[in-house]
Length: 106
Image 1 (cartoon, rainbow, N blue to C red):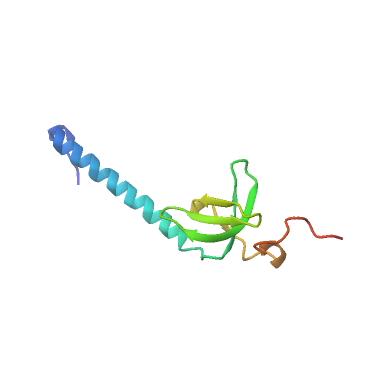
Image 2: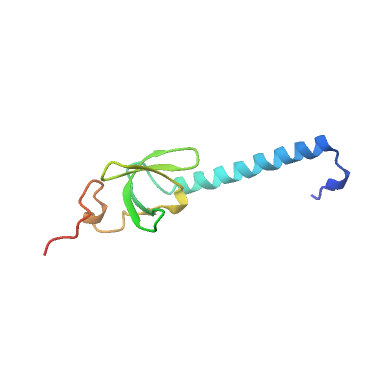
């Protein structure tokens, strides 16, 4: 469907703009929701922080477009689900939600 914007008046253009923005927001929310469905509350995950260092934690809550992750130090992060990596496939020592981040002795 092609729309000839040259024939639209100002009110029609404003209405079209509002509808386009609503549709884009809906698609973004649907994408975020789809990403959230890959993870469960209580699941151990990791994500890169602003410096690129991996942060490990547990999903504590779903938000509208993000999830809340709690680290073993008690800090909370609000993260896009697209940045998360599940840590269930790694060894139990690495997935302990409130375990030590120090390397094993030996």
